[in-house]
Picture (cartoon, rainbow, N blue to C red):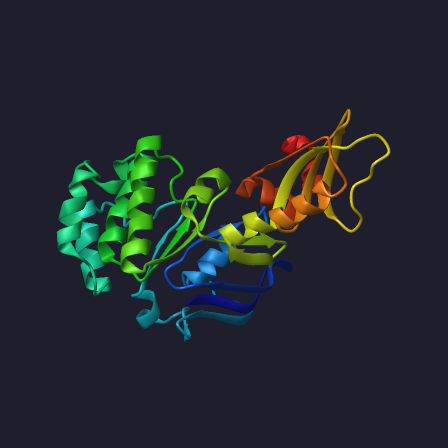
Length: 297
């Protein structure tokens, strides 16, 4: 398990992480989401062992990550801006990775040529940003890490390459038990690949749980009631909008139970719609804060 326990980090008196607790289950594809400034990239740099926390613990299977080569050999990190040694080629970086990662799989490196088709001998700094990202995935996937940490990992890639990379990453999680932590603003894309979600806000984790459980506990219901009939009391309403008789409700609770309670008052019309991860995020963080109330209509 990869985890953060009560982590605090400040920069020039500004608190970036405020007692952050995260637990990434082994073998999960965990999406770390939050608004700008929530602390996502700072959290990821701690988990990758780049930053030292002011307080708290950052652990991989109980081992501190910072300045611990034994822990770092078990994880690979792909940042938003890929760093390579000046003048290095992919082939030279592969030799470097073989010395660092004991599980580096030369056979897999060769097989990945079928997906990443650019030259291995061209200096990486002369490649486009998208091709540098591809090179980073080529190396990281060949290293066969136990934990793969990704920060905005597919920005700059075309749709076909994005899909291929996600297929490789999720296959590693499913078949080899690789733990994947990914931060991205593309919540629709994360929804397709993640099975766990953590929502950060102001340096804290508001919640973390399986995505399926999140989607089961927040429901969008459209309902039209007869004149003079009110909704059942005690509903946990996160958002409510009206269009004539038709009400659109965002409710916290189980879909089946909520439908039964509303059905009991005799609605003229009722249907239930699935919520996306993007919609869940907006209402967990606070849709009104972003002026996005109409997003769910």
